[in-house]
Length: 329
Length: 310
Ligand SMILES: Nc1ncnc2c1ncn2[C@@H]1O[C@H](COP(=O)(O)OP(=O)(O)O)[C@@H](O)[C@H]1O
Ligand SMILES: [Mg+2]
Image 1 (cartoon, rainbow over the protein chains, first blue to last red):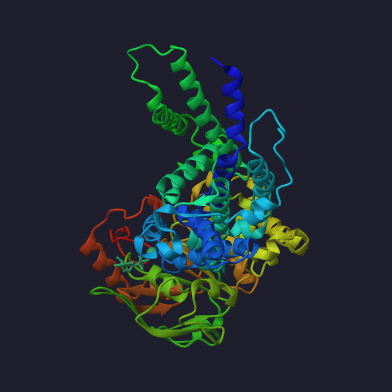
Image 2: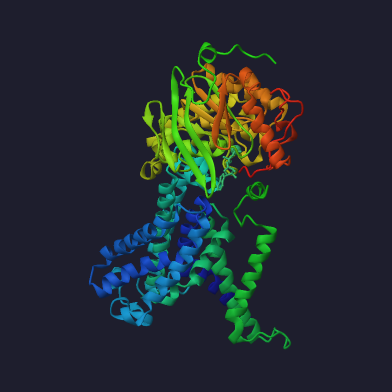
């Protein structure tokens, strides 16, 4: 067993691009679900909006990378308006259904043959981030004991501060009277309306804000792969982000980062650990685990852990048990 | 129980449905609301006197809550209009109604469980700069206003004897304390008219006395109160005027002393009593919220009927 490799690999994943964009996606969901009580089950759609907004603008329409970044964010805002307009007047379960369906519709449209010329179909779109990577000041040297490629280092050096900004914005908003209104809507929308707040508009603002965070997640994801593919933005994207949010602690400012680092770290740890254990012959023959099944088995493991978490620590890692108790009254 | 002498206007105007008041703050005209085949609200004309405490009573299912919902923009009537403080408020959405000085509470208390008592209070203040998205990010823009709001909230909490739970989650309060909080929070809006939907339901007798004195205090401060109540003791104690609703219509109006003797009122309560029987529709209503029609002049106490009331 190479423990050095196991820990290096775990650490690398924990601060790598996956942890970074899932933290962003979960930060968006935290605004929606955690603070406002908007059940968005289509965060993948916002991720796709950001990623495809960027990639299509650059690849198909030849827009500059920097302008295309804003187009990506703009697309997510438009998406929030389109999804929110008909649903935010209704009970929140309608939003859940609509967002879930919208994310799948968007994925299927994007991968359809008909729009291949514009959207890239199942092959996706590539080479939209060149302008960004040209600015990469890092050469092939190794900066840490971790083995990131130079372009990954460059991306991470830009993306993690972005996460900090996103959390800072969340913090500033949620300690403000705006945050108070939004949290009150989560508790009881009618009470807030009776006190003179336009709850519909607050919910729309929240949907847009969390959607923009989701778009940033999609953009970081796309940049880390240097490719966009429709199937990257399926339900797995959304539900991983939901799991990350719950793990970290719902309605906690830094919950998404804690959740993401731990979630992705544990996933990678299990992956490498199980492979090593199998190679070293530590798994007895009657246990049905082989190298080809590791990817799936670690997910089963993580799923079971989440179930246990919900039973024994429903507030997540950073949450406050008292709040759960009050909820259950 | 001491009953204050009725205000002079209440004794001089006729005691009949739809009667004009000398100084109405709220004037309702021809408001109808139908749920399928049921005409839940059918108010021809109703005026609410400014600066007075008006009780809205009526058997369960009479349409009291629905009328509240209509007047405050939480529901839309099939027809009709109403003016509040000389402004036409028909069709105005719920969130704008509060800005016109009209605020309501709910029959089922709506405390915001995971906000502290203080946060609940501060939410009630209107026109907060920090409630705008971009303004919220810059604390210096709203810090001063927030402090003023907090002082006002603290004064109200003091008055409602909630100061000691100021920083508790509202969800941790007792039912009665939540009723107090909901009323105090409504006052943060600085309304002209406070509409209370069964403010005493589920409140223990000690707290009830304190709630009663708070309601009277509102009148002293020049506010108008319209409240729904089942307990006739309470109605006698604090109201200047009583409006009786039955099957959506105003069937009687008058000062409390005149209402109990009105045969239409007795009929209305008896009708629902025999039609629907007893049975509590709401877990929140304790036995002491039962309507005691003894005071209305009948032999036996009645319970509110079993109609859905949420
Ligand atoms: N949303 C609704 N849909 C259908 N019927 C309703 C609705 N709200 C109230 N009702 C009916 O309208 C009538 C009046 O109800 P409500 O205003 O709650 O009475 P009250 O508050 O006087 O007890 C009742 O018969 C009730 O069942
Ligand atoms: Mg009612």
